[in-house]
Image 1 (cartoon, rainbow, N blue to C red):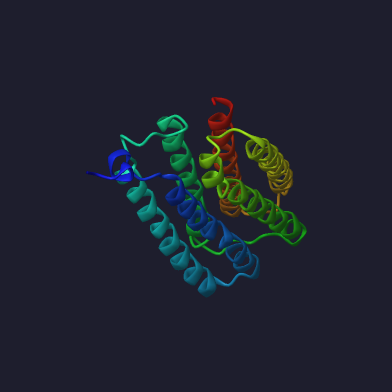
Image 2 (cartoon, rainbow, N blue to C red; image 1 turned 120 degrees about the horizontal axis):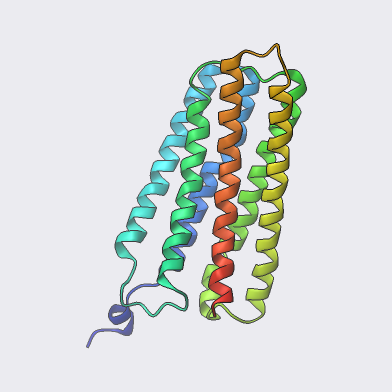
Amino acid sequence: MRSLSGLFGRSPFEPLIEHARKVHQCVSLVRPVAEAIVAGDSERLDELQHEMSKTEFEADQLKDQIRQSLPKRYFLPVNREDVAKFLSEMDKVADDTEDFAIVATFRPIVIPDDLKQDFLELVDKVLEVSELLLGVAEELAILQREAFSGPESNDVLMRIQAVCHAEWESDKLSRRIARRVYSDDSMDSVNILLIEKLCRSLTQIADHAENVGKNMRLMISRR
């Protein structure tokens, strides 16, 4: 007789947590990339871009494994579409981190001295968003055991709100940088474009991280 686990499939939540950890590993590389940009260290940027691409590829492999093995017969406590959306938005976080590293290698980017602090503050805020999200994602296994209800789910909802707030703060920082960049008549237009691309990648990392949190909120609210 086939076991119940064989009959109903393997839970996808532990692999989702593993994928979330790998994605956060990608985001963690954003800070050293930003430091290399500020320092004008092109050799270090090339090394980090290679490491970022390798880590993002590993995240992609995990994503593909989850999609291929996502059980069709497993009795999920949440909508299967919500699980797929969670994975898709997390994958976009990893994609945007790689975009950030790639843009950094296009050509030397000059971050004006009076923008360096704001730029690194934005980087750190995006990293904070990712750290908060990872803490939430690591609760998936517990939420599954509690069928996405109970006191643990209430705690997760509060932590998701912290993710959303940090994302909002990252948007404010990005707008502040944009205003200062576009008001500087002395800055090279290509340099402006590249700084804008860097900041867009950062805000998209935070945006997709917030979407993951909102997706988890839906999982809980639909119970």
